[in-house]
Each structure stands twice: as C-alpha cells, then as structure tokens.
Length: 153
Image (cartoon, rainbow, N blue to C red; front, side):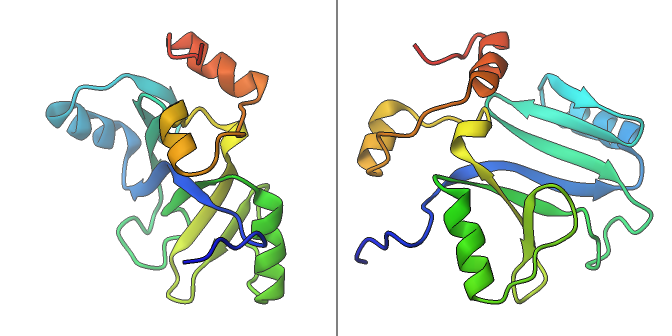
C-alpha cells in the first residue's frame, strides 16, 4: 500500500479497557492468574500495569453488555490532528469527553492517543522499521517511564 500522508499511522495499542461488576473482585481474579503491579486505582476502577501498556478495569452496572460505554481500546498514533481531520471528513461523531474517542460503524469504541503523550514505547529499531524514527516523548511520558526504570536513553 502506498504511504498516505493525510492519515495518521497506527503505532500500537496503549491499553484495553473492560467493564466489570466490581473492581476489587476483578483485581483479585486477575491477581489469581497473572503477576502484575497495579498502575493505579480509584473507587470504581483498577489499572493493571504491563510495562508501557495497561489493562483498565472499570465498574459499570451494565458490565458485559454490548451497549457498554466504557469498553474500548486505546490506539497510539503518530499524529492525532490527522485522525481528527479524517474523522471530520468522514462525518464520524466524536464521543463526549476530553479525548479523541469515537465508535466504528459496528459500535466498537476507539480512543486515540498520541505516541508522544503516553508511556507506550517502541524501540528505536522498530520505529525505524516503521518509518517513524522522528517520534519523541513528552517530558511527562518520559517521567512515567523513569519511575519504572524504563526511560529511554
């Protein structure tokens, strides 16, 4: 496929967000199967850390139903402005909230985040192989990685 400069490149998956009936029970369930540090938690959510990615488990009364407004996946891109432009051109409605969230034609919720803003990281040689060598991280994203001993050199 020829390179399209008017569309953002997908870089990877930042996170997956699922709904659960009870965040504490969900944490206990996942801890019974997997080893992981907890990235953070609130009264109604827990974030299971996987290095530079995470699994977000949020409580919802309708957990498990297809109409769930919280279930989504976070796509990391090189340019969120290009995504916003394309969504507008395609008449795709943005969902309420602070981010760049929308639904595909089948109802799947997609949250778009910029590579520079999140701790999700590709190695330099992988970025080069994807023709994305110029991508950088914000100071905040580097600080998050540094707290875990994973800051880029």
